[in-house]
Length: 341
Image (cartoon, rainbow, N blue to C red):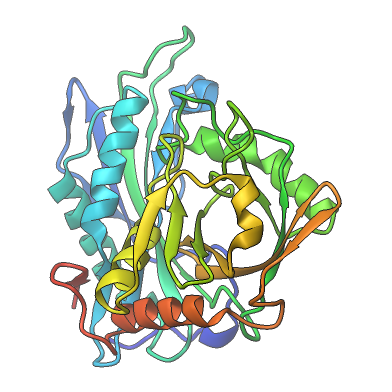
């Protein structure tokens, strides 16, 4: 298929409307058959549940063009499963996992001309999401829902090369114990906006959130999990019931153990330990790994030995291996890549 005439290497990380999107509606206790449509706009009542009580969940994933020319998605089964968990927590109907994957495949196929060519550094971002759509004025779950998938081509997350970032320990809490921090709900991201704007205004790239109960343990940032490297080259990632289980982080931990032969550990990480780590990274769909060079806590600084000029050596190996798997340079574990065409 002939690709759209876009400046693939300079498109940035923003929304570009594509040709088709998938829509399925839940009414009278069941999902309809769903369909691809042309119209990117959503029409809903002024009292729709999503507008009144933020009853919405979403996923984020990408489609890639591999070295051999195939279009693939990365571990869509895990996105499907995570959306099930998110929907249940917000009292929303589950969109079946096999239908989720089929909807993603249909939408990517229909927009194949927008999947950036191999070597451009760009990808096709995929956003499945679901929300309550019927009027709801009392505080209760909606009765009707809409599940949608749209796509948009996005440029490389790091333009001009990867540079380590500086983050700050946030004075705000990201998630409460027994709250919704472990699901991908829109409300979690809404409450993080003031914190990230504040961090940016103070000259920082991101926040490090500590646990809200004791403020002694590292949790995550507003949109990525932490990954640390010890001085003896062990990979450590924080464990908490309020952390969103990042698919990228889980994949990196597997790569560390099974491709690089490193010891991995998921456990509680106390902030007092951070100064003793050799490397630090933030992992998520958009950037895969963002290296962290410095953590600032009310004037006190933790500077990682990996420095502020480039990724540390172990995080670089993790990044190269996982992106190599995604792009087809390196053989993927069974089931990780879903070939679309």
